[in-house]
Image (cartoon, rainbow, N blue to C red; front, side, top):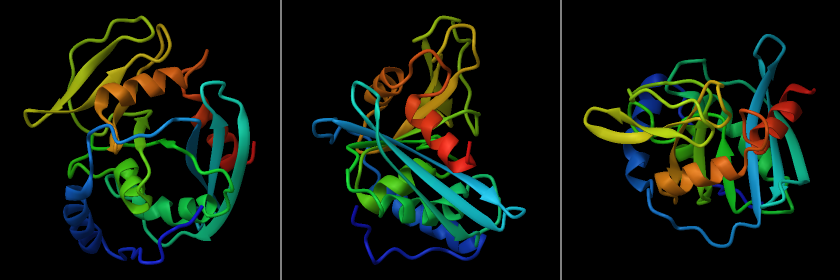
Length: 220
């Protein structure tokens, strides 16, 4: 997969904030997808007391959800752990892993936020804008926002609100299990993002894309 050479990464929180404020206007929250034949998950694990980031990408056929390709890449960790700035810590290694792919994913599910982010520019947005690929934020935990009580059945969901705006959805991906927090990353609407997350989820809480990427990134 070809990665743009022009990407520049911030070194400080102030620089990172400026990048988010500048690039968030490039996020497309409408469906700009082609045929979805391959879906991918990305995840990052850390080694040597967080000094090394190990990124993994898993590409699955869709709708069969069979693993067809994977790649792993490691890079020194150059950005601190700060909530709201996950992309600056993880995406450089993710891009290095994506660069190894021969099968180009049509949609990428990120283990993190899309626009459900204080500056509407979570890791799914940052990755999607950087490589111009449709992306979804499918996070395991809430960063910001509030919602109504969620029914216990798989497939139920409630809008996630923040500052008078719908920024995502709280989605039950498995009955009587903690929900996922879904938001648009890039080139996809919220209803379509919810649909694809549920279609990528089988009998577990997490989408198969995330489960495979997590296994690879953590070396399990």
